[in-house]
Length: 143
Ligand code: RTP
Ligand code: MG
Image (cartoon, rainbow, N blue to C red):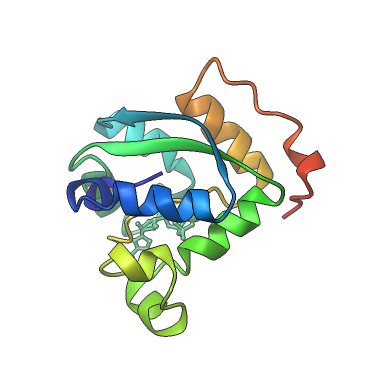
């Protein structure tokens, strides 16, 4: 997912180029404006964290571009490509990562990535009711 700061900062085309150069297939995509309820549900695992209200405000601040990405080891390869959560740290430790390119700090980090194959399955269903994820585990991703 390209988060609101990534979309509003006009990074979508650059990020898509990086995605295709890394041999991902973009299966489907949709531009969505999340409301509070949807953003809260998407990140429900963080609902008890102190940063949660800020996260919801951030995620509803503008449209997001949601994509289903496909390749062997997609989950771990995408997490590697985006870099660490804190974009400030990414700029130092992973200067070629996507978050180093377009993120700002530990919250505004311009992209999301599923953290496991089960999260990927849940998140694909969350946004794309009619997309049936392939046998994700058979694509070597077992986090
Ligand atoms: P994501 O789920 O968006 O791919 O990010 P992540 O796995 O790298 O990090 P996670 O721990 O799941 O956090 C989800 C998002 O919450 C925001 N956050 N803000 N203010 C803070 O300290 C803080 N910590 C996390 C970020 O937008 C993070 O990506
Ligand atoms: Mg996460």
